Length: 485
Image (cartoon, rainbow, N blue to C red; front, side):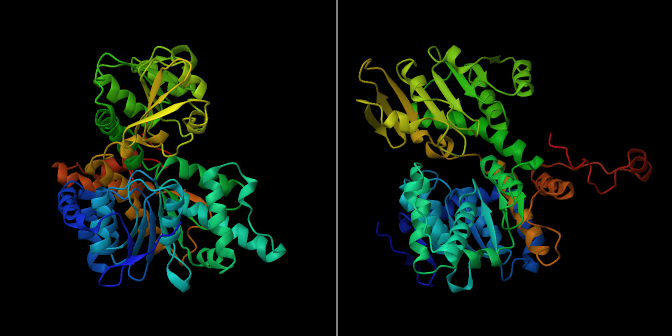
């Protein structure tokens, strides 16, 4: 693979699909700013003090129009930024072009190969000889993973001279990661160790990345502090639930032109993402069935008027299947063989291991018919019956559509800005250890407050007597630390 970093006239590095789309991207960014009041309020409140002056921030998060507003909020607050997308299909090329031209180093385009994807991730972390970023904005944890795996390999290499061996894993993507680290060790055996020493912390956007962080904390391998943005009230509810209410039907329509009304739809998982998907499908007059392992989530689904059944009970009768679990091996090739002809199978989680794409791709005699990018019909040889797979089993809300509305992402991304400010402000105080934290409730509430003016809301203020009666400070926080809903 031969990819070359390009430079703007001012010397900023980038690699995007088409810089001629930058003007179009700028027009859409201007529209999105009006619908992202939390981020614009951050600029108004913090911009003059330049709190990120001197900070180098790497982002690995879907390079969309909404993310462009996040990036330019970070730069407006004084940061220098390098960015890549966190999924091979999620980049909006006009957004990438506008940011690369105007604001930050960007390495992202829609339809990357896995090798290109990890090249972009590596470039986003490449700040030259000074050691890497001060802060990371991560979504799914790939930038964090590359540093952790790099440090582990460098320490092993220093002790034993042993290089990582990609043949030790059958995971094609992790083979690429190990190859990158192995090849880098030969030229710079301390690259990731220098990054570790410089890093102040990471703020993580989504469930999968958060799970990785908690696993590393549990086994004592987490290298720097982390803030779990995903479990902020103003992120989990607005992004995962309300966002999916919009983006699932949008993606289905764009990819397949299917009429949802009258169809039977199976939603695998009833967490916030699953709830949003089920709500959208139900509102579109589909019959919705939920699969669930958690009795509390199952009860919630039942109380919403949904059926709860195992996949095997409904696999041959449903028309649409949506995986939302964050787990692995949810819909296997054996399940797909039992489905109706042209049943639609898609994932709205972060990773691609909920749907058994490897089993499908290697099934003897299976035929792939690409209808359009990210919409493929796979036909089994014995039955001549096929299933329609969206976004190659990856997240269809960005692979096949344009993701969540700008206001929804304003809530999520304002959490990111506040988390980054918190990590940077406290970098020398010892407040944050090598552990995973959630945003304190007063900052979670701050994110909500930054949005209220745009919506015409004016909240009531407690009197001193009321404050004393409830044992709640007049200025908050109003919720206890464990509150999520």
